[in-house]
Length: 208
Picture 1 (tube, rainbow, N blue to C red):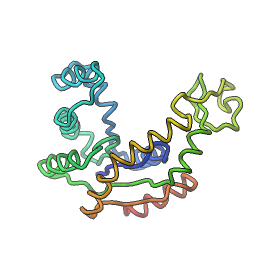
Picture 2 (spheres, helix red, strand yellow):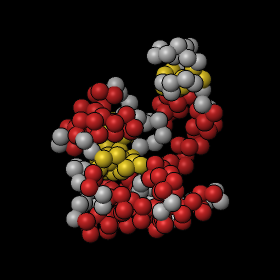
Picture 3 (tube, rainbow, N blue to C red):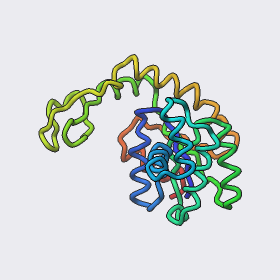
């Protein structure tokens, strides 16, 4: 099962990805993690990426696609993978399709965890994180239920920042959603429910 994962910040896609990875032993491919690993390893593509990252610029498509292609060629991806954070544009999606075609490992689905923007604003603005163990809770958690640590609100979980992130997501991802809908690969799941209910629908929609 080869999947591209789509969804706005706070939609819960990370939760669903983790469940799929655990149950079906899929490989989780995060472009953010790959970039950091390539830079740390000092690979040719990593050195290229570092130059852009140090300057605060976006890493060009050809470097990102190169990293993804290298990662997809590794043996642990043969059982299936979930791509998280890539592609971000329809141009990247076309390039990804071309590379997967060469590997004879096409996508099975583009999974969109869909949640109303106003629900996400409320969800993220009420999110609290434990300073000690990283537990993610809500404004109702005055102390961490796992370690009794201090709960705090991340700087980027204020309303203005959340709305800006959602606006950026909408502009960049709408064409990508249309692209996968046109390819008949888009699977849309209502993410505004209990995570276990969402997961049951995800499995059913993917035929798992």
